[in-house]
Length: 267
Ligand SMILES: [Zn+2]
Image (cartoon, rainbow, N blue to C red; front, side, top):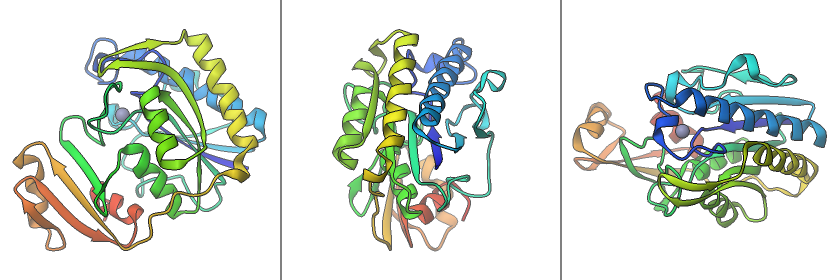
């Protein structure tokens, strides 16, 4: 079984502050260690459950999408590091039977939720598909769904785990911290968090046949609301994008995956 592992950073065990998730911040190296430890635990669990091929996508935006500590990365997986790739969700394809979302965070506006945001904590207020506001988890799950791949495991704080169950039903979650605000959480010790992630990753692979792809039938309408007008300004040159107001844009696409390729500048 091939597993596609989407990773972010804000949901890694022990991370509660942007000091640990931005490359120019004092504690970013600690954040990298936390993320790498969680990913390695998910790999060990997936392998124990029977995964034969694992692709890890380093998806957090800092350092151009290269956040893991490569020398510490667990064997038996291939790592997609850096950006841009050849398209959104590069590395995920129809051969994958299962997807993981490791170190994910809740959507913008969730509370209490560690470092809640959607795609960009600096630029984006909300992203919606057909009028429904989705966070990064929902967008990732829908893109995987367009390829027929179900999400079976989500790791992060209690807020993203609840978001996962609400959106995707009875999938496996590994809750490594309980959010108290955007920048505070009650965190499991590293060894405890990794043991939990490993056990839950194994369970997700063992239960893979139970999970359904999250599919939003196309064509879809995507709406992006930016924080300020200059952040939306670049869209004005595109004739296929409608400016609803100076900081809100909307466009149609064949699928959520096609829309995310437009959002990310691949199409
Ligand atoms: Zn991130």
